[in-house]
Image (tube, rainbow, N blue to C red):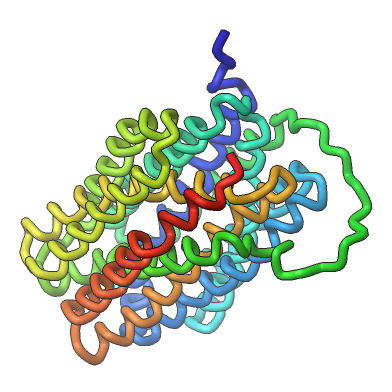
Length: 391
C-alpha cells in the first residue's frame, strides 16, 4: 500500500511556507516604488537597499543548514519564524531611508533561516517513498503565494495608496503561519555530540558546487526581472498595474509545470526535468529582453514560470540526492544560498545597469548570465550529477 503523501504535518509545513512567502512577497514587488515615492531614492539606491536583505538571507542560510542539522529543527524553526514576523513592525515604524534599509537588510536573516528550517521539516515528515514527489508539491506553496500576493498588493495599493496597510497585512499573515508551524509534531531527532571539526562541507554541499554556480546564473536573471518589472512596466510601457498580472502569469506557469513535471520526478527523470526547465526559461528571458512591449512583458512571464517550475524542484532533488541523510539541512541551505546570491547580484547589478544604461540593458545582461548557466548545465552539471548521486 502506497504511503500517504499529504499527512497532517506535511500539510502544516506546506501552509506555513505559503504564509512565509505570501507575507514576504506582499511587500517585495512594490518596494522599488515605495522607496522612490517615499524617500526619493534613485535606481542605484533602490538596488543597494534591496541587495542588503539578499546578503543577510544568504549568510543566514549558509549557517542555517548546519544549525538545523545540529539542533532541534522545531526550535530553530519557531525562533526564526517569530523573528521573521517581528520585523514587519520595523517597516511600519521606519521613518527614514537609512532606518528602512537597516530593517529590510536584517529581515533577510530570519527569512533565510525560517525557509531552510521549514523546508527541512517538510522533508523530515514526508514518507521516504514519496519524498521526491513531495518536494515538488512543496514548492507549489510559495508558487501559489507569489501568484496571489503581488497581485493583491498592487490592487490594495492602487485602491488605498497606503503602503502601511500592506505591512500590517503581511505581519498578520506571518503570525498565522507561525501558529500553524507551532502545531507540527516533529519527528524525534537524537542529538549527538559532534566530535568532527568544523569544515566548509558542514555549511555548504561541496559536491553541489557546479549546480550551485548555475543556480546563481538562473536566479540572477530572475532577480533583475522580478525586482524591476513593476517600475519598468510603469515607466517604459505605461502599464500601471501590469506587475500584478505579470506575477500571476509567472506563478501560473510555475504551478502548471510543477504539476506536470512531478510525473517525471516520480520516474527519476530529475536531470531531464532540470534541462527542460532551464531551456524553456532561457527562451522566456530572451523574449522579455528582445520584445519591449505588452506581448513580450506578459508572454515572457508565462514562459519563465513554466521553465522555473520544471527547473527548481529538479535542482532541489539533485542537491538532496548528492547529500547523505545527515546533511539534508546543508543540502537545502546550499541551493537556497545559491539562489539568494544570484538574486542579490541581480538586484544590485540590475539597478546599476538600469541607472546608467536603461532597463533594456539590465534585462539583456540577465539573459546573457542565464545563457552561461544553461551552457554550464549541459556541459558539466548534468553528467556530474548522474555520476555522483547517492539515490
